[in-house]
Image (cartoon, rainbow, N blue to C red):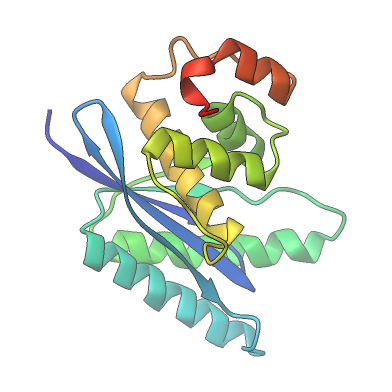
Length: 186
């Protein structure tokens, strides 16, 4: 089976996370992750341009084959979902222009469930599972928006490779650990 590169995006107009994994056979390998910090930029148009340019550069740099995006979720403020949708759209256009025609969306809860076995897992729990699964260590300099994006990429890998068999969906962190001991370091 040929290798492929999956770029995960956690869209945002203040912080946008990206995570990159390479699939080699039936294994996902960590490549890179990072965050685009847009908090100092006031213009919404300039933010979208920066999102487009950054995602384009990530796609070019890592020769992405597929992209997985965290889909916007409805909160208390409808304006938030509109802004997230714009950020997601800018990322999708960047991917399309870089030749990535396989783009998938995953709800935040679904991505967490696939990666950790618990759709209500905290960002810290997602980060811990990613470290254990990918065999890497993240320090405090790795923002959780980056690990969320990496989680979306890993979710896409699991969803498209059929490697979800044997991973139990659970309702608590403790139950996940009990049911999946090989996925958690002690």
